[in-house]
Amino acid sequence: MGSATVRMRQVFVLVGAWALAACGGSGVGMGSMNSSGSSQTQACSSNCGTAMVSMTDAPGDFISYMVNVVSLQLKRADGTVVETVPVTTQVDFAQLVNLSEIISAGQIPAGNYVSASITLDFSSGVIVVDNGTTGVTIAAANIINGATSMPLAAPNPTQMTLSLQLGSNNQFIVTPGKIANLALDFNLAASNAITPSDTSPTTVTVNPVLTAALVPDATKQIRVRGALVSADATAGSFVIGVRPFDDADGGFGQITVNTTATTTYSINNVAATGSAGLTQLAALMPGTMVVAFGTWNKAAQSFTASNVLAGSSVAGSMHDSVEGTVLSRSGNTLVVANGLIFRENMDDEDFARQVTVTLGAATMVTEDGQTATFSIQDISVGQHLQVSGTFGTDSSGNPTLDATAGSARLMLTGVSGIVTSVAANLVTINLNAIDGQDPTRLNFAGTGTSSAVDASATAYSVAVPAALATTTLSSGVPARFDGFVAPFGQAPPDFNASTLLSYADTRAQLFMQWASPGVTAPFATLSATQLLINQATVQSSARHIVRVGFATLDPSTASAGLQLLPDASATSLWLAIAHVQSHMSENFAAFSDFTAALMTDLNGTNAIVQIFANGHYDPTSGAFTVDQMLVLFNN
Image (cartoon, rainbow, N blue to C red; front, side):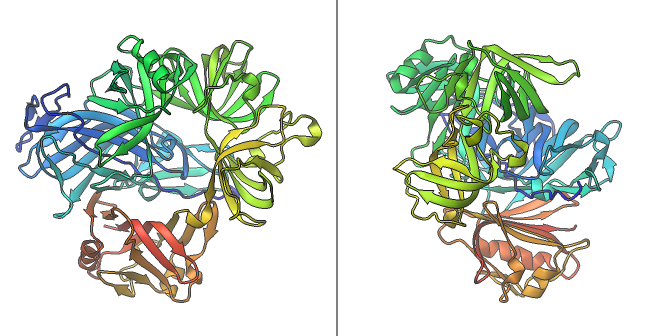
């Protein structure tokens, strides 16, 4: 990997289960097994609830982490095992950034569920490690099963099963007509150890960790994809038959999507808003592919969309497409980095480091959340986008996409950096990243009205609307903006912001790791209300960092040590203890239950090898208030 530093990140796999319709309605029955393990086909009646399963991810060490989910099972107290994923589903965990993907909405029998397990298949896995530049693809022979030290490739077993036990006060109870939530967390940072060499990571060792909570993460936007079942313009809603990711068919249950007057639509690459968009959606043939982005309201028990795509606007439904970041533009030719490739009517996706895309005057362009008219001139360097057309290869065999008769969807893009100046409605930053890319990868030639004013990474100008207060910003302060890159050839400004993130309110991430075999007594204080790791023990760990945005802090500098406290303001706590060798984990909703279990496990023999936490950090006092925490033991 040379001098490049692999950037740690956590990946949270979110699984929520809630009753979206009365049992016995249009929901799909799931297969189940009795306590002897024999299979049962159980038609859901009035004694069932609808289970919606979704997955989410956050930025991390991997550009791509593509594996198959072949099974997700829930086990009731009476021994009945219910399968909630009816067919093998390909998932790229690294692509689910700040998003929850609904993968199932079928019905399951009512009851008290005490454990869960998920089986992953690595036989066709694609793992690309983020080394800070172009990424490094890990050969199949170098993806290692941590339990056996053998490659997760044929002729060796290619599947791994992760199991978790829900605590006595944290069980998943499904009752007819009621909402039950279960959130599963497959943490990529905790589940994978990357072994670097001088030039690239040689191996990724997989010791998967699965944890759970009983409420979904309310900060994540939810995405649902599937076939249109029906739409009711009067009721302001439509129904989707769930087909997650790139599945072309299959029965994963149904979900009702509510809309509002501000819901935006892109239907066959034509933009609309509110009732006009829903009326256009209702005119489509049943079975048309639809993707809806929105939020789940727990109190109202409803899903409401903010943005809807349908027909040819859905990636891979009618055309080939690629989603990624524009690295450069020359005339009508783009180079798109870290491309997630969708092939027309295919059940899977692929990954390419770079794809050459050709635009034309007939390329239809839309921008998420906007109904204005756009053209290919609106596509500039740094923009996150999805382009549809026809795939091919160049003379060297590299992937190309002809979008001259296709479409381009401009998507919300993030930029971050250190503020260098603040003026009226204009902030200038020294870029740290644009759409997650190191700015040294981007070629800004042609972005300005003349070459003298092309965008510059060291003086990147961001136009800020008057509605966004910039009073918290000053020279030297880190900042992040979400919005859209200015049209090609029209900078400055280089970027048009729609939101501003204050790093004072940004959640922190804690990563701690001790060299094998770990530490048997890491806590100077272990009580029902706090965990204290003294300064010497923090300094003894092989890795100890706190990340706040793109800033990195050293928790070992606090002389009082690192104090881990439950966040009293959090609506829920995600707390877990995992055992990496046995692939088992315990999950807790109360901090006191969590610390009591830690006391039991720290018996003088078991050792802690890693600690992960999310929350807020005070570097002066060393206090870290957690709402999510995972402790890994070596056994």
